[in-house]
Image (cartoon, rainbow, N blue to C red; front, side):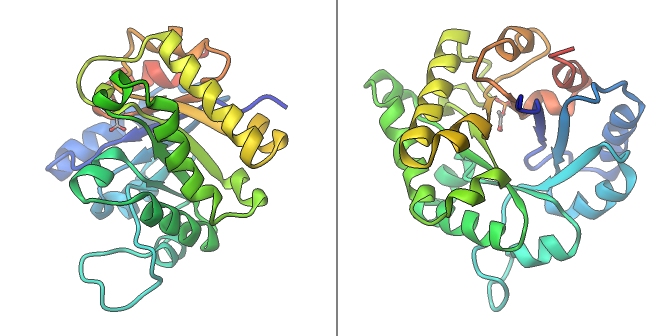
Length: 250
Ligand code: PEP
């Protein structure tokens, strides 16, 4: 069975006003979107519920993070059971900004992934190397290490609820998109890792999406690659270009 194309929009800590948020909703709701693509938008937590209610039915929402504990004295955090209770279907975990700015370790990302799946959330799991690691030829080793931490805590059946986002850190928000060759190689390596460490079935079925400076101009070439099953889009998801990216396969 072919893997369904998946496009996520990561709004990060944007926009700063409800008016701007409404304008983005209007653009999305008014757009002609490829029905074959699964579309998910990840706003700041404050906007999750209003967005869930105001977006048309074929666009889902995702949280940008969750905590690994279910409840208690963890000021400022949101738990997986809370997201699930609110009807939020997806959560992004392991984004490089969380790994770098908030010092999230591979083990913490794995624990959050396990907690999210236990609450029946689906996870967009981000992995990727930084510039120095790529230049040192360590891309596969870094990505495999990040994935191995998750493999260690999950059951093989859990992977049907995970979308892996390969996001080279040097490409995020920089305008330096990976070349099709770089993206295909990294995605194929991830699929091989899944085949070796989990199962061939999981490797064949898991969607591996690319993130890092995807735009309307470069999305078609990337979407055509054998092992690229969609995109996680930051900056361009706040612009009308996002519609072109959603429709990249059409
Ligand atoms: C991201 O933050 O996940 C991302 C891919 O950002 P950008 O598209 O802006 O590079």
